[in-house]
Length: 291
Image (cartoon, rainbow, N blue to C red; front, side, top):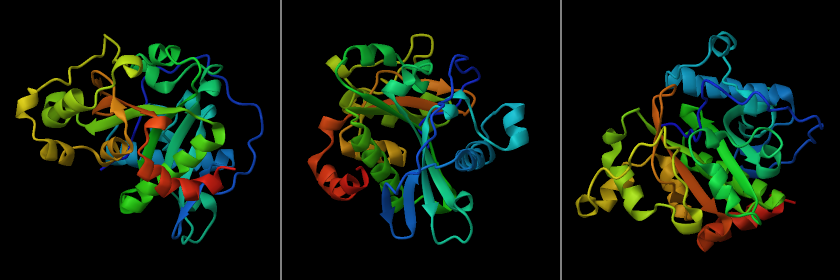
């Protein structure tokens, strides 16, 4: 199981510029037991997060990364310079923070993307059209999510969400979105799950967003009457199921990421649509971490 939400592509925009401001030391955004989530506080911690991503994406998933990435054993691209890196740390591990990192998420706010080459997922989906329809809303992209195998538990996923939720509150985000991945580069192998998403939770009207025409792969692989909802949900990657519980919808069409051997869909989650029970569950805790 991988919690990856977005993958590297061979070409990244050349006009992305790194932030010049010094990042402040950030307090914890959430805690569950010995696990803690917060933003990376230094380039060294961001580098350590890239090492965790390499272990999951390259060594576990056999992703095809660049020769330089393989040499350095780091998964990195141009967006790393402008994103915030959410970390999950096991504070029970002896050593410094870099040794404690067991999971990571990459967060990109709209105001940063606007001056830094755009959103990562617009290389697969028509995100520009979606954002343009909502000029009064602030978008926040979630991506590059992964957790080391021994930490892939419900509480780690909950902590990742708690960190994202606290970050969204802190920065006044209205919409969260990002790529979610199914293993394998053959969408037909996920016909049941993809068809369920297409027929039941596809983003429509003002929230509609489609895969770019040159990459578009149909998700409408089974007639609606042939879909067993319970079996379809059981076949979903855990993070996709988690987003569905929160009230997310899915863009139209999937994209095959050949470098990673995955089938990607786009998650769209307006903050206002998040189920009240989850806001109550995370809000009391995340709200105090967001100030």
